Structures are given as C-alpha cells and as structure tokens.
Image 1 (cartoon, rainbow, N blue to C red):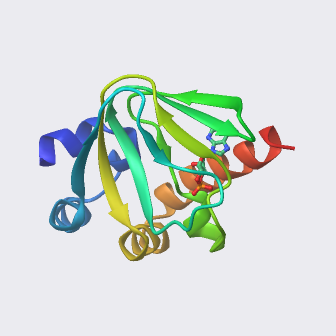
Image 2: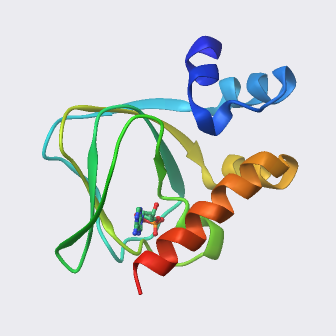
Length: 130
Ligand code: CMP
C-alpha cells in the first residue's frame, strides 16, 4: 500500500508518519464501467482518488470534465459541507482510494502541500462551473 500511495501525486509530499496514518485509514474500492458513484445533490462524506481508470463529471446531464489516474474528486462537498455539485460516473473499470471526511480534513489541516493542491483545484473547478 505504501508503494501505491507514493505513486499518487495527492500523497507524494507526505512524511512517512503521515503516509502511515493514511495507510491505516485509506480504503480501496472498485467500480465497473458505467457505474454512477454518486449523483449531483447527494450528501457526501467521502472523497476519492483514482488509482486506475477514468470517470466523467456531469452537471445537469452535461459533461464538465473527465478525470483519470491520480486525479481526485468528491472533495468539494467535504470542504464546504454542501451536497455533491456534480454526478460522477465511471467511463472504464475504476479503482479508487477513498478517505472519510474526517481523515480528509485532518490531512488538509496538517499538510500545507495538500491544502494548497486541494484549494487550487477547488477554485479551478468552481470557476469552470460558472
Ligand atoms: P463534490 O461536489 O463533492 O462532488 C462532485 C465532484 O465533482 C466535486 O466534488 C468535484 O470533485 C468534481 N467536480 C465538480 N466540478 C468539476 C469540474 N469542473 N472539473 C472537475 N471536477 C469537478
């Protein structure tokens, strides 16, 4: 698991101590092609990092993005405590790592590099969706 984590940009800058913490808390999950992981308007308490595969992000049935290996999604509902702002559907078989809201928030609070990566992406995504 540690080797997998080090290859994912989201976790790249973490100390060994933080990596151990993640290793203890991250879960792996798998979805087949064509699966809706969650829908716009759902409540959200998990964020996802794509280990392998591709997903489509849709708002009001229009595609706003495609995300692949190493990308993350599902962070916005956790950051702002609001419902999911888009539907995420798999375009291939997809393997993900998932973090609970509490683990994600503690990672963001304790790691400036992750906080900065998440905020850059959130601002970009909010702008794209205007
Ligand atoms: P969240 O709102 O929790 O659930 C839907 C997710 O889709 C959202 O978090 C982001 O991770 C992702 N998302 C929303 N808009 C975009 C976008 N324009 N580009 C890429 N990802 C997006």
